[in-house]
Length: 116
Image 1 (tube, rainbow, N blue to C red):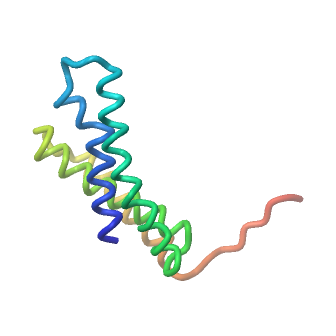
Image 2 (cartoon, rainbow, N blue to C red):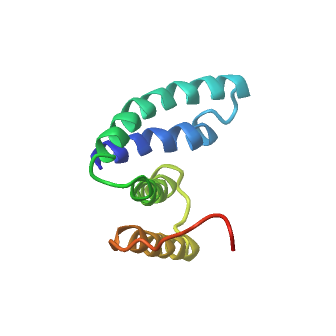
């Protein structure tokens, strides 16, 4: 989980850091810098998922990653980008709590594809 948190810090900066730090720079430069930062994100994210897949299902890993992403993103917005934390962000977080509940509750409902 720590690897996922660290990879999400790099990912969030790669996706949104250029909005603050490279505002007046050429778009191609912002793309290249973001691409470079994303390389380090993948250096952490790929091993995190490989290790995590030994203990969690793919769906559980995805939901965990989304929850971590929203937490890192919220901190990034407030502390780095200096944007206010809004109630809608917190409500979206509650929806993720619901997603986590359904992914980790231990009961899987069968789904069939085909004849209805």
